[in-house]
Length: 270
Image (cartoon, rainbow, N blue to C red):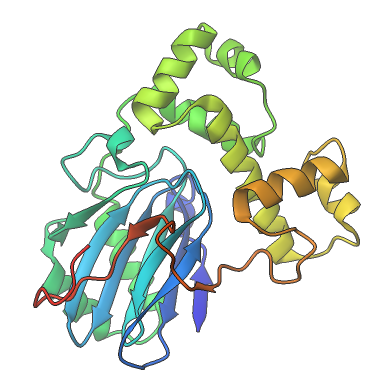
């Protein structure tokens, strides 16, 4: 069961959504698809084997996360460039990586888990997380880099690199160095992932009649361009009725796993 909630108005510029998902209750783990995404996720696992809090950074290509099926997961999806400084790490070092956290806003993971477990719905748990996240400063210290990310997001990824540089008053080379150094990817990749995010949101919301309508609504020049871009990033065509939903995977040696489940007793590692 998946639940998603929008953030409070004062956090909407920094946070895209709060989410929760429960496993099927069976012992064991499973791999689930994770779409390329320029935003980071804060993930808290509540399970009989213990609690875990990780900050999962941007993912530049199709990947997978490993989940404990007996656990419940709570998460916060941050807008691109708006990840809070929750760990002693450079923002660019989080790309295709994750960092283990021992506390959030000064509250130890076990204490945080106890607080959240006493509340049964996502809305009340969201209030706890929001209060702690309000205390955090941004991980991306450069205001210009945060402005760059917000601009790309606001335009749904449909903006040229030279236009971005002009809007920010810098040379193209300077923009590229800023983007890689602060956001962990090139401006072109940043824009491409913003387009995918925009398309997925529109597909989830519905309301379009054909793929041609979707392409126009999302700023693509034509339907083939949308199909090609979507398939290259997600591995499936947008015409699939469940294309916007991540799915369970049978992991292979070539699967890029960006986050693994690890029990507190050390029975699993990753």
